[in-house]
Length: 256
Image 1: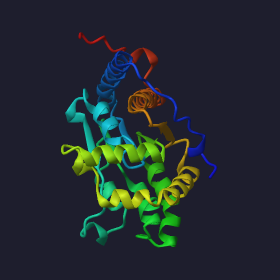
Image 2 (image 1 turned 90 degrees about the vertical axis):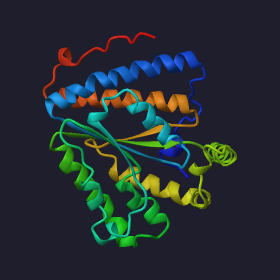
Image 3 (image 1 turned 30 degrees about the vertical axis):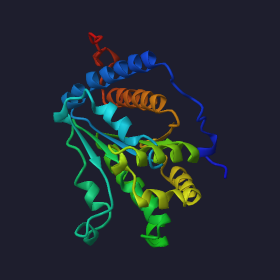
Image 4 (image 1 turned 120 degrees about the horizontal axis):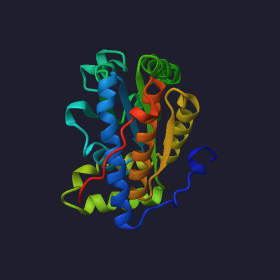
């Protein structure tokens, strides 16, 4: 199948630990240096993480928030809606998680479940997930028109790499909880999820709320790529809201 996923170079990697740790510290410090400026200027940020199961979303998020001021960032792990949430419009539970101005919200899965898992698993009717693209675009447009930044990441790995990670999780007593029967069932529908993802990119990759597809066969490379893109997009957000280049702090090197 042709599409954006098939054009991703999954051979990109970082294999030197010293290089990885040096870059990790660099971008973590950049992110921290910008966080308080967001608060000062009353600007909100939403980062959305989607991707294949075991593609490294949790690990990337963990590194992104590791050195941030916890008072100004919130991570939202999203699972299937609870019974009481099903009594409302599917977007209601996400509206409640929009961050205050000046804060950062990170979504581990998101409202895109409507056009991914709910589409593939037939939890939503065709007319429901079909109209969701424009509903989502409008939701994101409302926020980005009102001092919010939205940037979305899809972590992409091969089916073989996913299998290796599944097997590793299943054999590790400390990580066994991360793998479920549902993960294996979803894997069997890889091609259906790929089609749904391609439709999602085509219909919701906007100038205001773009998608970045991250090569994630190598976890170190993926984490650095994400942190780099996060700092870049926040810097652009600050500048678009009247912050000059001179006002954006240059982080000091952290002592080892």
